[in-house]
Image 1 (cartoon, rainbow, N blue to C red):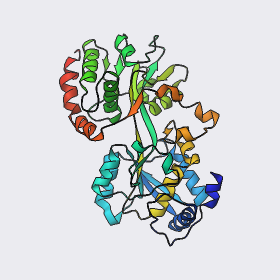
Image 2 (image 1 turned 120 degrees about the vertical axis):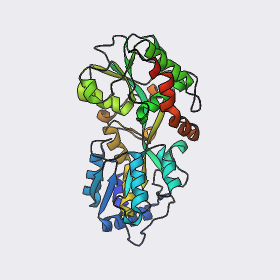
Image 3 (image 1 turned 135 degrees about the vertical axis):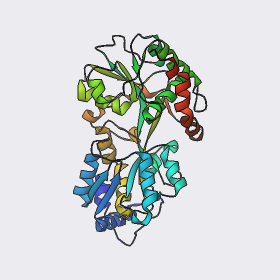
Image 4 (image 1 turned 60 degrees about the vertical axis):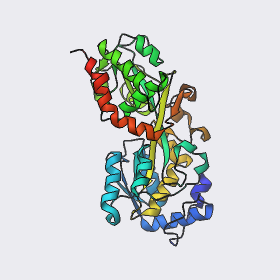
Length: 353
């Protein structure tokens, strides 16, 4: 990768480099053009999320790029790109996997395929380079071992337990909705059919075992949550922040869902080359390791040798053998829109007063 850093030096002539996979001479041109722009403005990429802090710091020290971020949701990011158009104040954003195709449909993305394009799985990228996942999240259990002596390793184990399970607000949180899909995968359902999961959580509700607390770090820290259904990167982060010995993070062995987050380069970006260089760096070995330091699983994990201390922050690859990406995104988009009503009708109705 040091060869990449040394070779990335560039000509402002290529104000909008082609979407084709970057070659060494293109990287040289890209760096020069990015340096001339001098800054990159992001949305939804704050220092505290996925260790973006180190990436912005590297882009500044290596390429002289100043940076600012405004944190917002995926939907808000795309709405901002569409509303501001040529008056763009943001160059690049980080959005949930489902929002990549939406960005293309809205016409607010511009393509750029980084050097490591071929090492990104086909399910995790747009064939034209408009979006590609930089890191993944897989639904996991975060278990408070002080309150739960028999740690669940599967949805089946969860069903047999006596403890309270907290998933969050299925109507508004992507994490919670994906928790429902993960349970569906394990129980024989899919993107079109989440009945098995609704039945599962409905039974927990009948037993008084479905928590209503939001599974955020403050509530976990107060001991209000026994088992939380969360993204693995959130679970690992919470575990290490509170007490590494008290909490265990487990990927359910009978099935889970893997999704992730993609960079979107604003079609109207004022600093398009800086945004492309940022994407290039994010997908480089150094950028991927930065994400792993923030507990996010790099999309190129299989092609990286992570430093031992960084590897220790993540779960072993063997934990993920029955986790899979969404196969039918269109079907899941449709189902997830109905999920708040389905959850109300099949789960909340069974909550003990």
